[in-house]
Each structure stands twice: as structure tokens, then as C-alpha cells.
Length: 342
Length: 232
Image (tube, rainbow over all chains, first blue to last red; front, top):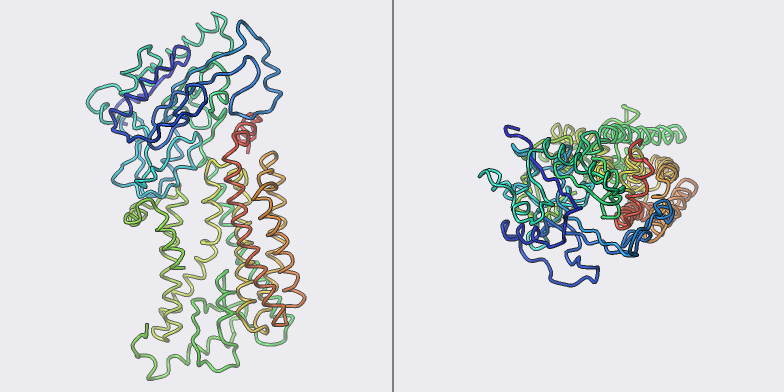
């Protein structure tokens, strides 16, 4: 990072749900229209972040204190927070966005290097490199990045990379009328957020909490973090996301062990078969494919007149397998230099 | 092999940019490693087969054969990492077991193919392998369901549950028939087909479990709240 790491602090306690951020984002980034339907879910007709929705204002309109719209959570959770005050409905609004994780799974798993870390510490897709494999989509612990069906490639918030380069703040932060979306150097934003949540606690908003601010969390802290007025899952956010590649070394280790077990299991199979039958072992293959190919290969005693489409004529458990003789037959003069019939 | 490679390329949003897969060699991306593996295994297997069929270049054929034989198991198990290196609860939660499950399932399928196509006197190794694979698959599935806790529902219920139950029955029946009656042509054929179908059901079942676990937020939220992911 040649520049200071920047990000968003989205203070949902002052969000008024105007959706100016959504509009500004769409306009500046020239994102195509992706549906104009009404969901019947409060004022939330955007529904979720996606390839063509990089800012999403979530509306949580629900009876207070129990009941959490759309999220079928364990019933016990609503019981423990039983301090109804005032009206029996509540209305939460929050402008969601790509988190620009410190440890970004999408970036880690991208096989083309299309996703990269910019000099501002943000995570951006290079549209001219992405080949639309879509693997980053299930890797994101927040469900942010998505493929645009008509296009094939993936798209997500760039934190207005072009504007940052020109010394401008991102379009959403610029458009936000209440400064719910604050843009700036991440360290500064974290300080400001800590002060803000303290003030809210002093004012009696006990549920106010920061989300994604902690550099020690499962994703190493978010470049775009939030002040929420209830648990993250109420807003449709995962409570304790972990970058999936944290467990990758374990996975590779187990995959290696599994591959060796596969070879070992087959070796056991060949050895057992060789012992129980007092005849030349039929096996020359190794690996999963070896079994299949073995089926094609000729028995040692038969004449090698037909093709052996075997790519696996490795010595089996018994290296003296006469099966290798068949390949010798193919070296007969007149056959060897014949043009390949294909 | 080349058919599946074509299908994989077709699945890209931009098939014309397949070559971008080989722009970088990136161990943090199972998709990258898989692309490299397939790029090596496919030509090796193809060359080995071509040399064997035509009888030309026997030494190169042997080399290709060795390469394909060594890469084969890696191709069979990397998909376990590919699936589990995601935020999908039913897959990521099983990241220790999935490679073994896919290895067992691949062995069962390979044994099944051998039982279907080969003369019965050549299939004893396949019959042993099928029995081992069936036992391993049952044990690994059991381990997955124990590990996943609440998320194990997605492996037991719905479409995934049906597929995985079918898979278990087919694989067990196929392996038992292969082990006991595999020396009869008819029984070998039937058991081979059962093993192949069982393996296919395992893959589709695991896929369906992942989809089900990603659909319902409770499979993401509850384990995270319980701190399971923090310690797993």
C-alpha cells in the first residue's frame, strides 16, 4: 500500500433511509438497472447487495422487541433482550456495502488474479481480467460479490477506485445527507466510531455496537465497518465471519492425505487380489484411473491385438507383471512409425 | 476428461478468457490449483491413451502414464478443497472430511467402471477397492454429520438427504454385490452400475446440502454465535 488505507464508517444510527447512496453509486459507476419490482418488505426494494447493487439500504421494520424479519433464528434470542420501550414497532435502516476485508476471501481464491488489493487497501475486480469463474461468490463470507448474468463477470463495490485516484471521496459518502456514510483513513474512522458508540451508550442506547471494526476478528477487520443498533444478524449480517482460507492449509493437508489413502487403498486392493488368486495379478495401474484402465487392458495371456488405451501402465504391486510385454509388442517394426490414425 | 474440461470452460462467465486461469499459480486458490492440475492431467492422460492406442512413442507414453497416475488422485481430492474453501456452511464445516469423502467416492466410481467394463477375472482388485471405498465413504459421512452439528440437517434432510441416503444404499449394495458375487458377469455389471450411480448421488447430494445450508441464514448465524467457527 503506497497510500494510507481508507474505508467507510457507516453509522446506521443517523441513517434516514433516503437511498441517496444507492442512487449516487449507480450513477457514478454506471451500474445497469437490475429490477424495479416491489418486494413488500418495508421500504427495502433493493433486497441485497449484488453485481449491480453495490450499496443496499436495508430496512428492518418489525415489532419490538421480539421478532426479527426474514431471519428464522432461535426463539430464545428474543427472550433475553426484553426491554421494550415506547412503541411496539421499530424501524432500523442501514446502508450495506462491500466490507473490503483485511483478509479478503474473494481475493485469496480468485484463480486469475483479477481481484487485487489497491494502493488504498481496498479490494477491486479488474474487469478486463475476470473470466467469470464465479469462485469468489461462495467464498465471500458476507455474500457481497456476484456474477452479472448477462455479462458473466463478477462485480462489486470498488470504493470508487477512480474517484480515490483523483483525490475525491466515494460517490455514496459524497451523497449521504446525514453523514451516516463517512469516508476517510481507516485509523481515524475507527477512533471516531469508538467515540460515537461510547456516546450512544451514555445516552442509553445499550444495543449500539460496532461491527467489523476489530482488526483481530475472523477477517482481520473490515475496511468498511458499521455502527449497528442491534445484533448484526438482525441486519442480515453474519455475526462472526471468518475468512475461508484461514483453514486452507488444513484442507490441503487433508487432501494430500486423502490422495495418498486413495493410492494406498488401491494398492491394498491389488495386493489382496493378487494374494487370493494364484495367478498373475491383473493390475498394472495405479491411482483411481488405474482401476478403470485396467479394465480395458488385456489379460496378460491374451494376444495384444486390440488397443490398450492405457495411460497407466505403471508397475503394480508386483513389478514382474507380464503386462508390460504387451507394450513391447507395439514396438514391432512396421507398426511403430505408422502415422497416427485419429 | 476432455468433455469435463469443456464443460468447465463452458461454465465460465467468459469462456474465451479461460487462459486467464493460467495467468497465475496461486496456492491460496483451489480453483487455480485445480486448473493447473487439470491442465497437466488432461494432456498426460490423453497422451498416454494416444500412445497406447497407436503404439507410437512408447517411452513418452510410459512417462505420460506415470504422470497421469500420480496426478489422478490429486484430481480426485482437490475438489474436496474446492468445495470446502468457501463460506458455505455445509461444505466449509466439513473441510477436514470432504477430501476423504471424494477420494472414497472416486474409488467407488472407478471400481464400478471396472466392474462394468472388464472381464470378471480381471476385476478382483476393483472388488476389493469397492468394498474399501464403501466402508470409507460410510465412515466419513458419519464423521461429517457428527462434526457439523446443527448444519448436519442439510446433509440429512431435503433433496440432499434423499440423494445421500440413496447413495449410501447404492454404494453399500454395489460394494456388497461386487465383493460377494462379482465373479459372475451379470452381478458384476449390476454392482458396477450401482457403484457408479451411488458415487454420482454422493456428489449431487453434497452439492445440494451446500445449497440448502447457504439458503437458510440460521446455518450461518447459529454456528457463528456458538463460536463453532472460531474454534474449528
